[in-house]
Image (cartoon, rainbow, N blue to C red):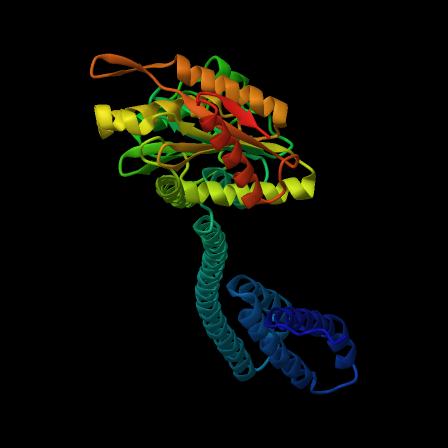
Length: 481
């Protein structure tokens, strides 16, 4: 491979050649010329030739090595030539001296030019290097900005994904689950996601949902700690880079047992109403920055709006499916649920019991005491039925003074027992109307699935028949097939 000849290499090579020539010429003067003097008549011409060559070498020393080496070579040359110069014709002597001074002057001039050129080259090189460093720094900064922009774009896409999922969620449970999962996905390893729900009546927080990586411990403070109370009091987001170094907080008690080192907390607020708190914490100090806090703020805002929308939707749905007077489900919703439960029972081999209730002599109450008094009785019975309903049971105002009670998982015997308890509780409950204590009774018809019927219309028909028989047999009683 060919070696690249740089100016520095060429200069060193010329200096070496000049030194060799200088040494060789001095050797010739000291050794060769005396020998030749015995054989050549006009030896002075040889000496003059050597001296002229030496003047060129001295000029090279001045040019290549600077003032010191140029002057040193000049003096050495003069010392060696002194003996020969004394024997020369004065004319030759003057010409040689002028030649040495002339060559030294030229060498010095060239040396100064080279020195100035080197200085300019050094300044130019430093300027170029400075420009290169500025370009590299600019490139590095632009690269960092591009990388940061890429991370921001990824974060925004993840936020868009959260917003899309929340727009399709209409229950608080699904919203909290989506937010916790996606927030953990955004902030990755070492973090823990905590979702606190705010109880307005008790004015306290309650841990609703927690999601963590395997490296994290479970959160023990179910009602939150000092950081949650600070956020709740100040109603603004909190970023703590190191809980032991933050002068705002004095960590003690249960807080010291937790493995949190840094954290971010966002209050979930809609129109000055606190819905809850979203917390992200980490095992590592300085694991979060202002950019990540802004991301959490956006997630919190999306979550707060989604929760409020879900609550409004649930309220609207309840208004649509519940009777405003009794708080029980309306006839339409009851029929839809009954059809669903029939299908589930057929597929899963399950049982349920349908109770149809009718208030005895309700028309007489209305005629005697007015419709307002009738409303009091309807509400009273609604409360009794709700108190007897187990998880999953469906209680509805079937129409007028008639009610329907769908007891899931019950057979006919347990249905009869439940019906008797309801009938007895209603009979023993005294209703005060116009300062007059009145007793209200109900008649109950029972139909069991699949013993009495296996279709929606059939089971309603069987329960109605039993209710009619209870009415015809004297009211205030329970009848079944």
